[in-house]
Image 1 (cartoon, rainbow, N blue to C red):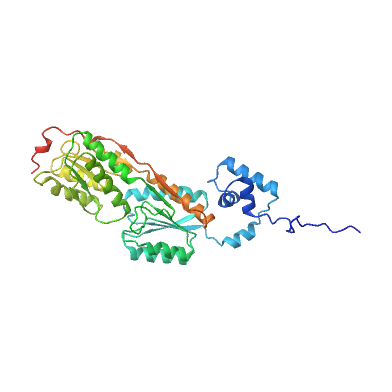
Image 2: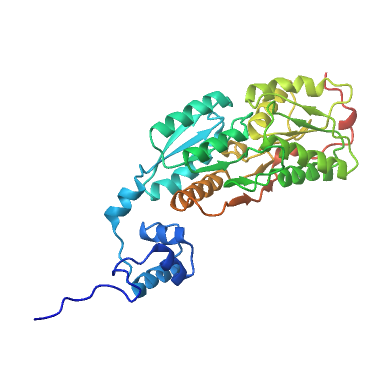
Length: 362
């Protein structure tokens, strides 16, 4: 009579019980990378995928897809919370998020918080009730650190995008984040205006305090002080085209009007250009105007808008990839992706004539 085949391993375990951690060790990658390979994710490089698959073959790993599905209990949905849905920048960000999620079979629930923390709280609670697998959060102004602690208690993976919540520190290194180097971008465009001969430069736009405003304002301040120029001409206004147009009077009717206006974003800058046009003036000729973000309309305005490109679509893609990695590996180390900004010089900044500093704008 034949003896029954012994299916145990030398260490007493039964065959087929190789763990993801063992596969990761064999392949020299993280456990989350192995998980992404098993799900067929395109986020993994071909060479890495082949190395993981070779390790699984060498160890005899068998993927129990049914058990994995039960264990994960995922809905393939994520929440995307933005604070200014009417801003074209956020449309680009959303498109970038969708680029990545769609290839992974995920769908995003999009919510506009309208810069209201209490509204943000309601949306997050509703998303939790719908059992989303994670959230990408552009924190509303006034968001407190307690919110992130609450998401931790809910075990709801979260990636912050564009802005981050912090308790007084300049950055929060303990959380996943995707954004851009706002301060460097604002320093660069300020330096450019100074190189054109401008000495009286206004910083225009923004009435709410958050990490993105602080970084942009800091860039303006640092650059102006580096050149020995006054940084006190700061005009705060809502981030709308109408507000940009209306603030033209405030800028130009001053005893010593600025010769250049460095706007918080393109929306305000495009509005300011309209305000100048209504007075028979032109950006780049009568007042240098710059924006920030490089939304599609910036290149199409007349004159075309000098601005700082911040790659909104790529930020969305990076934020989505970060979230998918966090969902796959909740205990992994935090990741921060800070994209460089890029100055895009067009006609709206012009070159000031020598008489501009004393020109009468009334």
